[in-house]
Picture 1 (cartoon, one colour):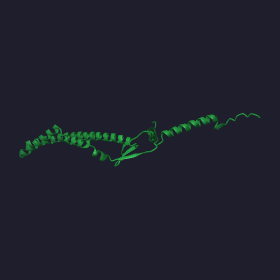
Picture 2: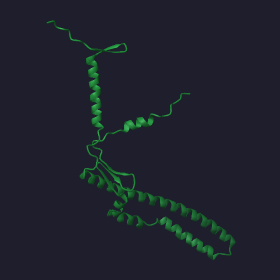
Picture 3: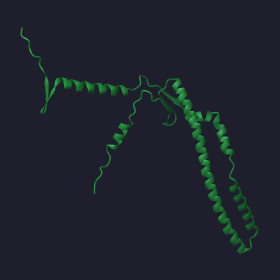
Picture 4: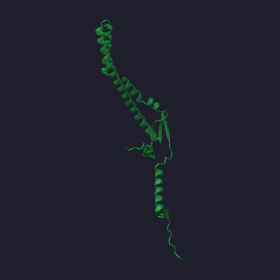
Length: 197
């Protein structure tokens, strides 16, 4: 019996000769990398979705009436109140001096100046009030999100949506793939070309 030499299979790619072992090793690397990516991007075995009505949550939350009462109790600033009193006094003096033209003209100028100041103070107060309201709402929403996170974790939910709006109250990121880099690449793929002048 004559021993045969083992046959060596060689693939020809263009002008290169690649042994079968190298092709098999490369294929194994590609397949294992693909399997690893598939495992990483695999969706969770079961996606459980929860729905919560955010408006009802905020309205029924025990802190909401306290926050609303605190916001309503906030008084107008002392500066605004003093300007209102001074404006009312000047307007009354103007009514009392109906026939004194020169005095009335000076009073009109002073009243217009005071009204402008009052408007500026009122605008500043309104801005402060809006900022306080935003802070209060943000505090309530932080509490709601904490409660949603705890409840969703207890019920093994993957995601919790607001029932009335397309907002996510909770997202369980365990087992989910982060595709941020791929999205950035996709968004920037149709970027305008830069021209050199």
